[in-house]
Image (cartoon, rainbow, N blue to C red; front, top):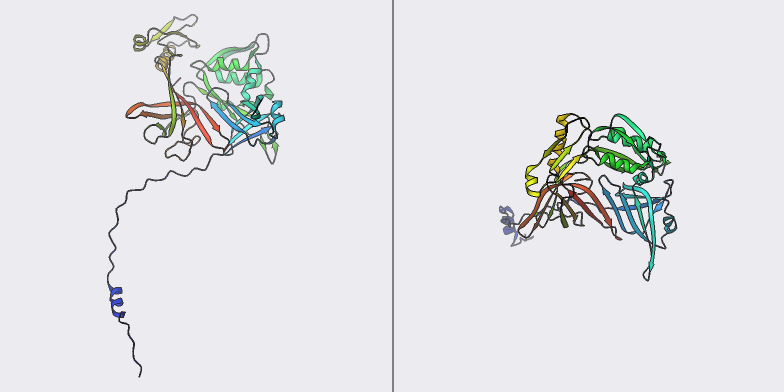
Length: 404
């Protein structure tokens, strides 16, 4: 006879299965800080071209690479290579161009202007310096005729320079810089005589440096493609905007902090300078009364600092408005801050060039030493430099200042 065999554990297991399961109480945990968004490493490439802009190849094993981009000045680049570099002979000829790319974006394009070979017990190396194609402005003449080039009707300052750079100057077609009229403007229109026989760079400085002049940049232009070869002889685009604050915008999200908050700054230097300070300013115009404006608080604090404004205005209201605006910006000493952000681009909160800020933008800078707040202000970016070491790590340095 068959005997039914039952496990002694069957019923308890069934009862256990039917019982309601209660989850254990959750263990309290500290909130996890959000990780900063991942940013891929910055990649730089330095390319050598011949004098006709034909690429010769990437300059590998270069070290102490640097690219600097100031506002209203010429960009420049430099690097070192060992003597056994494949391009050492071409670099020593000093008759080519350097193109520098940051994450495949062209950041610099200009002629080599010096190459220095130095040797010691450690070996031999070549130091190469390149500069913006605007360097040719120092080697070309504007108003190259006995009476100069006369602009007898009121003409925008930036448009006068464009005409001298592209048409009125000496051999303008091969220096590589062009200008689009739609991207040119200054603070005033004037009558002017270019030259006679002055450099194009002197003409640029004279037209741009006054308060009613303009800020300028020369943007690098790609003129080569693998499919089509040389696209044009243009290497730079000259752009201009009225002073002050011609380029850039307010970037509220770009905050740099030293010794506090996100602590995104490694080191900084703050300078107070009085080189352009003034608290009494005159305007003298032929056939019109001499007028002046004063800033009394500045006068009582710093003593008298006088200047004559250089501007062609005849309207009384505009003359006084110009003087008052000059005093608003220049009555007190000017503040300049230079700093170096942390190297790691993934540092939480570190603003990124080309994304969170650019040349000419206004950003926030704060600094503290222990419990003492040293600085909390809005400043404008006047220049940025990139240094790239032999491992490809980029270190940025920014120059900031108050309105100029």
